[in-house]
Image 1 (cartoon, one colour):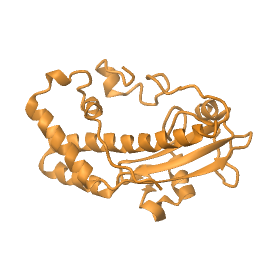
Image 2 (cartoon, rainbow, N blue to C red; image 1 turned 180 degrees about the vertical axis):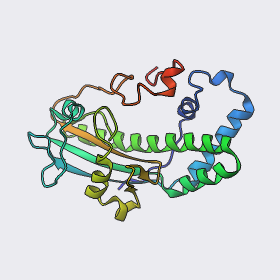
Image 3 (cartoon, helix red, strand yellow; image 1 turned 30 degrees about the vertical axis):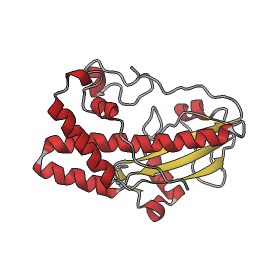
Image 4 (cartoon, rainbow, N blue to C red; image 1 turned 135 degrees about the vertical axis):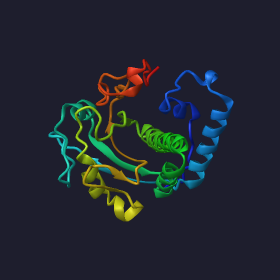
Length: 226
């Protein structure tokens, strides 16, 4: 397995904090605080990941498992896929501990740390995704967008099924609790289809996002794809 370094896109942190496209207007002291928090998360993070490849039958069930996809969004992504990657990623529990400690003494710092940790987990997932995409392209195979439980109509209940399927608790200390929340919190589970045909990039904008009606960014006129 490849060793990945934790990276944090500060512009992404600004977006999480509600500063998208406003970096020039952020006070320098706040910028310095954000950079220090990013450094704390980088030092605390312990990147771990695991994945498996499964054949998909015509009913979108993963062969050799009890896991299948019946919702419309999964069908849209996987309709031309012969196989799929089931992926789990975490930056570890130390980042969670850092955030919880800050929540006791400094809520502003806690919010910034949380945003930095979210950006770190997403960056780690994207690095792995890019590596897989390059590997499969060498074989003339193409990946779909990465999509996760909770996206569109894909149920969050798949979190625990994916964790069981990948034995994530044993391999990397990652589990899904009764509320379907991943522990450590800054973790991601995802599905990526593998096809012999080039695949369109479908995840863009707000149309299929399950958060579109309650998203604080949308309410403020800020959109993830702009």
